Length: 165
Image 1 (cartoon, one colour):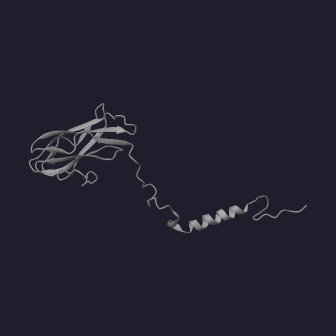
Image 2 (cartoon, rainbow, N blue to C red):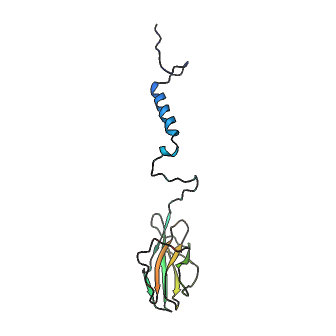
Image 3 (cartoon, rainbow, N blue to C red):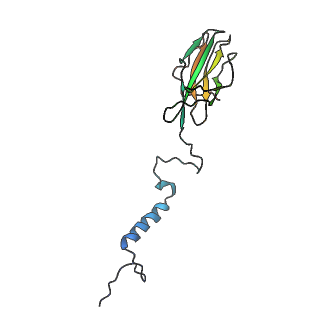
């Protein structure tokens, strides 16, 4: 009986010729380094990839908010989970982004109510200013309310910029 000759036959293990072709492609692709990676993949270290937010903060108050010197207003934000449901009894931090001068917040933190709403009082200073009130909460991107006091120009169109925490 004639024995069939197969490339790559080794004892009881049969390796087909297309295996070698696939192996050659993998080996040559690996030698190209980063050039073999698709262009849309970011170059990041393992463990440093930011996770998408699982919660959201949304401004309830009018934005931009225009105040006269010394005027009081309330700023409010809704805090919700990924499904859009309210997150009650959660802490939301408030701060200024930009130069608020002598404008002040009643507190640095507020707790959400049963509807997921966090709010604080704001007192406009005597110095004209343009800034934003920033709200931060766990697992959510920050949210902003633009504020102008006195004759200061508003920040309309600057929603993507942040002067800091």
